[in-house]
Length: 475
Ligand SMILES: Cc1cc2nc3c(=O)[nH]c(=O)nc-3n(C[C@H](O)[C@H](O)[C@H](O)COP(=O)(O)OP(=O)(O)OC[C@H]3O[C@@H](n4cnc5c(N)ncnc54)[C@H](O)[C@@H]3O)c2cc1C
Image 1 (tube, protein in one colour):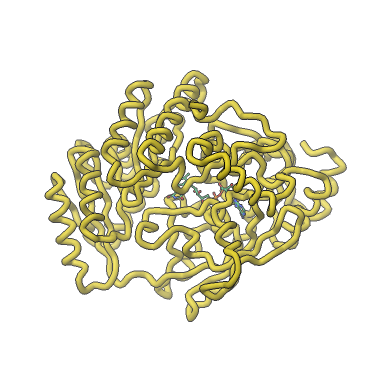
Image 2 (tube, protein in one colour; image 1 turned 90 degrees about the horizontal axis):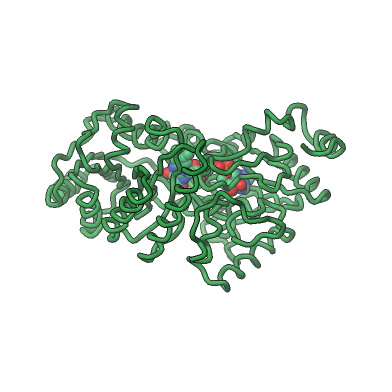
């Protein structure tokens, strides 16, 4: 807990009920969705305005306390873990849509707004906020900005950085700045681009000016069923190679299908090796011709059946099952870790085979549900976190999976961020000079390293190597 005098000072800055400090309250904030590493902050503050965020940041600066920004805590890499203690700034009470400007296709929102609420606010007018992480019913726009989140539809529409025009940011010393501009091309250095994806290590995002996109005139959603993951992977390469740009191209393997079918009874084939969800959107004219091309290519690549969603309700049920797939895995095991690697999509068959071999060698079940069109893998490793031996096995297997991605020219993360989970692997992807340049950049925004310490970069002042990380980074 924070010493009583500091706690009193913090409480004086905020309305009653906005500072949590009892151990049972702090427990709720001791991890994100990367649950195998836990550390509670000394206090959690729940501000409702930029002024309150800035006051807390000034207070932390004055007293040399670590400050950890947090949205909904759906992150999958331990990005908002408070392993150095300090104050956690949870933005979940800053949820307003401040302005909708349809003529200019943009909105101004507070950072704690839940992603799906923004599209809900503009859907009646035919617009949407394009980044749609599968966690969108819970995660916040601030968290999306910090992680540069993607989602099923970012294959066609781009990730968060493509949809943010400007940000209001509180720097670690409490200064409030605006980065970016409401116009499309602001002159000068792209500080906005730097902020997006900085995993809460450069500043605390309090407001965002975001782009709104018109909803497509027409949509076709297909479920293609394949005997094996390799066949489905070959179909992915064929579709993209044919010049088709689906709005979404998602894969679920046999183990994931078991979990989602048990949870949602959609009618997924339980004897399939894998399925692809392929969504096409755009103008009505020409969309059926594209759908026919997709059907032909899927059948050429050994699809046993391709179903087309009957109507909007059928499509919604299919997407619900896909977006809740990782949660449904809770039916298969007490714990899971959702990994995140990227590979060239033409290498999908061999890397998925390597993941399967790693699982067999370590005696672990690994399910796969992922954004296949982007080559963005999400192996979900099933285990029981109450057994320390299993945790060690998972971390070793996880390390091997990351290396398998790097071996084919991929990356250790696509959209979930590095966080604490993968910081020890950064040196396998980047040179010492690259990492030193990143550390210098962080110092510009966060000179004493107090803002979200120990995230993203492998070296951090005052932070010892934590025990529960993927193993094997040294080799
Ligand atoms: C079931 C499930 C499915 C998911 N699917 C996807 C997916 O399809 N695509 C995808 O990209 N991700 C996905 N994620 C991961 C996660 O939801 C995203 O990373 C999301 O953007 C995190 O938002 P959050 O509000 O929960 O942030 P948190 O988890 O609270 O924080 C994440 C990081 O952002 C920082 N942060 C949060 N708010 C701010 C702020 N206002 N200012 C500065 N830094 C801040 C934190 O310090 C931390 O480093 C999924 C997660 C789950 C559990």
